[in-house]
Amino acid sequence: MLKYLIPLALFLVLVVFLAIGLTRNPQELPSALIDKPAPTFRLPQLKQPDRTFSAEDMRGKVWMLNVWASWCVACRDEHPFLFEYQKSGAVPIYGLNYKDRPEDALGWLGELGDPYLLSAVDFDGRVAIDYGVYGAPESYIIDKSGTIRLKHVGPVMPDVWEKKILPLVQELNRQ
Amino acid sequence: MNNQMTRSRLLALLLLCLLASFAMAQVQTEDQPSDDPVIEQRLAKLSHELRCLQCQNQTLADSPSDLAADLRREIRAQMKAGKSDQEIIAFLTQRYGQFILYRPRVSPLTYLLWFGPFVFLLGGLVVLFRYIKQRRDEITELPLTAEDRRRAEEMLASSRKETA
Image (tube, rainbow over all chains, first blue to last red):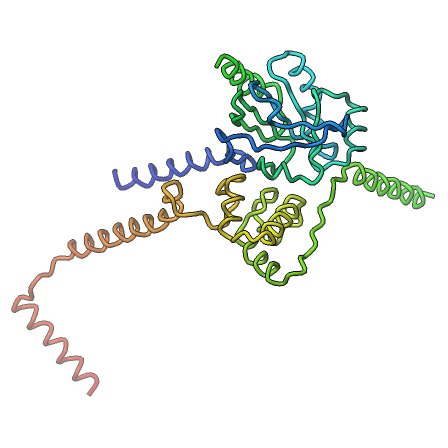
């Protein structure tokens, strides 16, 4: 009897492993930057190119950096929700306009609206490399000490917002 | 008439695709080879060891993706600045994690990956040997009785007679 049960047990273990494998998203990589200081940058602002924005400016605040581009298809899915998140006042949302022509980016915001407090222009994607960006949209939650606490790859849909981001920013704001 | 209609429809579709591709344009990175052949040689070698994060199953050397071009540019710039291959790999793994390495490092996290196959091989060999031993134990050798010996000799003798 045991002779037949052992292969069956092994097979079931294999099935469980493969089933878990199927539910995981291979596009989503664990970020190497979690709990590391957010890379510093100083970039021109999209709407006021003579002014700059830096991660340093946000010291002492919990904030969200959202990497977006006008050519990014999934950014369109996320975009309408960003207004709601911003309006909720839970966390200030800043944009990082990634490898985009400023005129395209401004056109996009003009057409769909601008949910960001401001967007910084990462024209050549150099800052995005520092943040380990490999696909827009990506969102980072950075705490008061300037440490990256969460990275989300892909659009921040309401379920992600409610389950992952909101509880975290509430906790970080209490600290 | 019908033919012309399909043709104009096709043309419209083509135009639409073109327009869409204009709308999607991202800022292109210049992916110019450096004029230093040593750098290019080092880049070629290093980028075969690194994964393109957008396409995941291609190396940085083979990938046409924009991020891969950005990273190649970054690597060239760092080589030009005198960084060693080790330093560049450290720079990239700090940002993208070990996933960017095509050959994962041997660390407690990757022991299963590196040694798992050998463990399975060993397990298989153990099962195989135990099976063989079990079968061998099942065979019990019976010593020949005098009667068996006599019959065998009779058979041998008769076959010798036949061949003769």
